[in-house]
Image 1 (cartoon, rainbow, N blue to C red):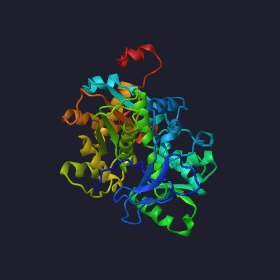
Image 2 (image 1 turned 30 degrees about the vertical axis):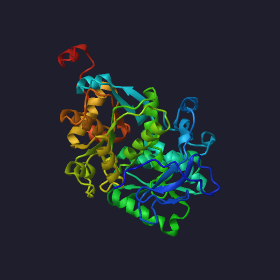
Image 3 (image 1 turned 90 degrees about the horizontal axis):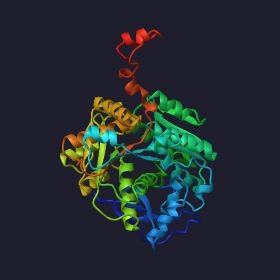
Image 4 (image 1 turned 60 degrees about the vertical axis):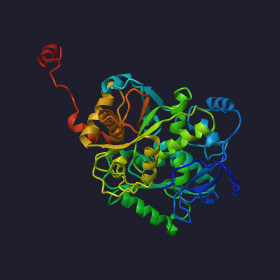
Length: 431
């Protein structure tokens, strides 16, 4: 499997569209280049396509100042993204620039001495990191003249697409497994677009969307995580940019990242490599760790077995936002974890719930189940000696716990129910 690299050579295809520094789509497997367009697979080898750039060169300090003077959202990094220079003036949700929380209380609980941070992306407009990727895909859809924004989703993406489409004046039609958490269903539906439940799991939904793209019904539709996937994925790079800028323009030693399709992890690595290449951060070793739920852990299983192929599984976990049994970027995740000296680990649903409560109790951050998996994996990595607690570590929380209340509701509630008297308060042992 080829290791993902940064390609900054080539000339801009004559598309008549403004994609900023993006010059082409490049196949991860064979390197074949095609013009920028709403395509996602290489016609030569069927490998995945990603955006290749002619990134800005020159004085890194001048580029740092340009970024720092930009808006407090992902568009401060427009010079490094496949978007036009005037993107900030277009109607969108302007996600990003979320908090990097120094988690000293959690660090003490886990025995981390090198510094621990939580990148809390629950502060985005629809309370998940998906707003980042949808913002980039939306600009591609706008540029290509597409009329309907769509996706296959485990929940968070459906809400992000619905909200972004409403803001930008697009029609939206999104597809979800029929048994998602109620909070995510309501949030996806409230924006007024069409929300369609599909009988089956996420992989069934994704296959349906791939078929719909080839049907006349799907003409002029932008499926953000299918035919717009090369652009969509680039939104995750902004997590890497923000983490490094918020750390004072330096790389962390270790990052723990949840795995659904695996795209977020691969793009964070791509973003870190770009910052090094541009001279915006000093190059040094860093380790990337992937986190999965035990009930949907095909990448973790492959990593532990020393395999390069990720065998699909049928998901069975409360962490439904991570419940992708056939992760498209799984092999690339394995490459990155091994190249950087990291690992891929998994935790049970019970460990996920315990980690949600641990993060809430120590740092006042209520994570959804994906965040519980990531914090739980961090704890497990420390306990098993796979992660060095003396090194600076960043862990990602990608969504808000209010979306997955069912996970913690059975074991979370009032400490006591008493009569409205001081005597009753004392009797309950609370005084």
